[in-house]
Image 1: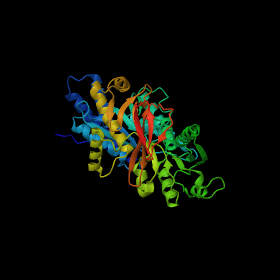
Image 2: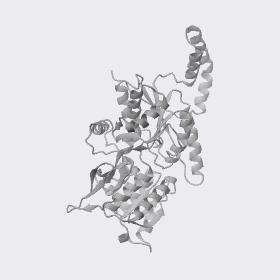
Image 3: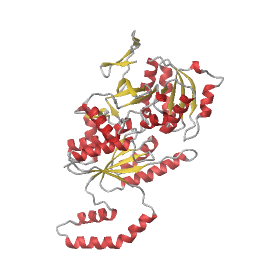
Amino acid sequence: MARKPFAKTIRPAGKAAWLRVVAGIALIWLALFAVIVASSGISVGERVMAYVDIMRGNTSSAVKIGLVYADNEEVNSFTNGARLAAARVNAEGGILGQDLELLLYREEVSFGEGGFERTIARTMRLAGEVARQNGLFGVIGHEWSDTAITASAIYNQNDILYLATHATASALTNHGFSLLFALQPDNSDNTEMIARYALATGLKRFLVLTDKSDYGKEAGDFFSAVATQQGGNVVFRGYLPGHGRSVDQLLMFVLDNNLFGKGDYDAFFVASALTLDTAEFIRRARELGLDKPVLGLEYMFSNTIENHVGRQKMKDVIGVSLFDSESVNALSTDFVSSYLQQYNGMPDLSAALGYDAVMLLKEVTERTGTLDPGRIADALKVARYGVPFEGVTGKIVFNTKGLITDTDVFVVRHDGTRFQTVASYRKPLEWSSDIIERSGDDSALMPDPAANKEHTVP
């Protein structure tokens, strides 16, 4: 019989909850005393652990995975993907014969003056709460690089495996944390791919607009550097208002200024720590008649952006993605079919990452036969030189720092109805010095020595 998947939301207990706990302590201790008196053949250590579990309320024997998400609602593509995987894991017998239980935690960030410090403090408290969860096997999630980097230190200190599904800061994997694994390429790789794709398709003059977050500034720096080094031109670089503030003043400047006109640039490059800020920029730009392509990174392939902007206005929005929704391999087609049936919508990159993270932990425990984080971390890294893990996002292997490598990453471009895969590259990047040649049907072939194959770029 298929086991029912677990999903539970864990939040800090309020005062009322603590009062109920205190009120029940006497009864709990009486129950503990009865258990001890009635038991026999149990070691002192086992009895102590039983005390701890019962006092914390952690009597479940399930394998627990913490899932840290950022949306205001628990039901979003990331949590949906993870839940879909958990249902499959439990239907197939769980993890090493135990049920899988997802523990959901919502993180928050602050902006403006003092926002970074408040975000770090909140993240430290949240990560500490997650790490104290008894029987925790691992953690997946954290949407922002600032929160992921902060939380990774706490998880590593507490010997907890951490799969960073969304963070792409280049600094994430530079701290030597042996239990940290980044499931997406970093900003350096992603910006190089999107810049080279743009240049290959005749887009050479850019307006670079980012927010003032570390993520936005790093992405803007990397994109500007690659674009100019490869013969492009940054016509203007400015800041998105961000944090829910109106973008109209910025857009009025783009429409009417003394520095450049509409014919002086080919595309926008937009990077923001908040997905909705990017979505609002695209929506208002399209409403005001700015129909130039909008380039971005991994956040562009998002149901959140498409729902906010509207499909028709999404035309020529371009991003990068590990997930090729048009793939015909069995894992991807099965995932897309199951997701459509369960949630009545197409999965985006975030859904695929949530699904892959859970399934990866299932597969690595089957290979190792253990829940030991050190042995699992070693198995994840040596798979690069042996049998790689396969997910709906493709091959999943890591370098010695824990950064995903040796895998295909795709450029996706919206045609006004949906995102389509228009190019791909193999990480680690190895670019050909050959000049891209256009054929009569307005297509181009981009040689990729690392992948040893040719990719069609329209």
